[in-house]
Length: 255
Image (tube, rainbow, N blue to C red; front, side, top):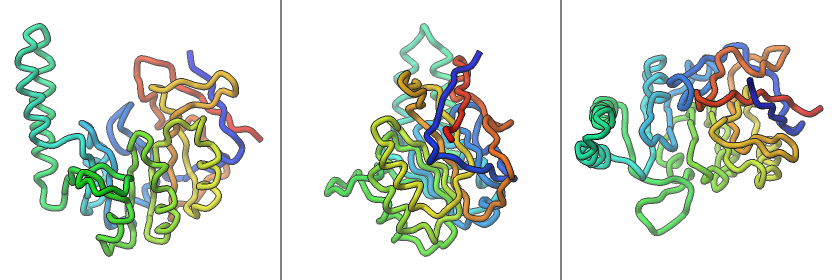
């Protein structure tokens, strides 16, 4: 069984010929162009939570610096989660999971080229827990930057920054939330962003709107360097449902 989703025509695209899956199976993995990885000199991950498999897999393919931004987590946060889990004698697996999450965090983010910055992205504020994407990009001289963006709705705060800096961007994987109330914003962004849209996947943790079968959360991949296929592969053979316990959302695109 599967769910049917439908996309407006402005999201039509041709697939990249060299899509690879980066990150873990199901939620946390994305399809991006291999040649964009090869041409990148920096990876910026916006939003990591307890899953940095995308960043780990990316640097295994191309040894670049990684700046990962997320104000909701830290080594202290994962340590406290582990201590709390020890009280759950009814769920010993929780303690094991928390312990190994802490170890994985320490192992990856202690690497020389990998840095976790404990800030939320998008809001221009005096609060030191926040910073803008403009600030991040202005702080580096790299000219082939790959961005992974999953910031739970804050992405709409800096779509214009992506457009302004598009000449410095080698590729983007962008998770768009609440698509039903942001369709016009998304349409404008697609029109003005010069990187090629080369893949779309619907996140099945979120529902599909009954009125027009629009998925509420979409994962979009953009590429600067890839060659395009003559077709649109939906679903792609590397696609997986984010929620492995629910049906995949099969997408059709309006003419």
